[in-house]
Length: 111
Length: 110
View (cartoon, rainbow over the protein chains, first blue to last red):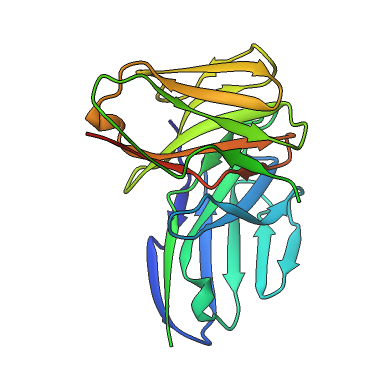
């Protein structure tokens, strides 16, 4: 099945640093979603983007829906230890309810 | 608070057993999905359903079947469990604007 190209694959950062990750696709999407997964848990929705060019914030998280509808990025500012986890992007294909997931970015935050 | 509930967090089954993984959502969502998640392979879609008694194959349906007799319940069935079906199984439901996931069932087949 199709997967999105998500980068970086993993990040090891110091508490307080900013983080940036992105997803690209060869296909267009009409919705981009960003999820976080803690160990042993299911993914939890962080941010949903429904319009090309849209920039949305959720606390220290900011995400953008690319103008071409083929990419999205997620920024986390001033990281804290509880930001540790795996972050997934996901794109919703037009006229379906099937989500295509990115390969995930594993984030480690050191105090 | 809206919820997707998976009946078991951890399950250990023997090879050849028939295994049922249950998923219930309380959001009146039409669409429900089953994924498995394995290290290095990401989330892979097994089956999905857009309505009661309706089912569609995802990317890796072999060895699995599903049942959707009621809107709120979507069951994943392993007809004869094998060791390569050891995995984390995730259920999700949706209205078409984003999925809500359950907490997952970690299945080990021995």
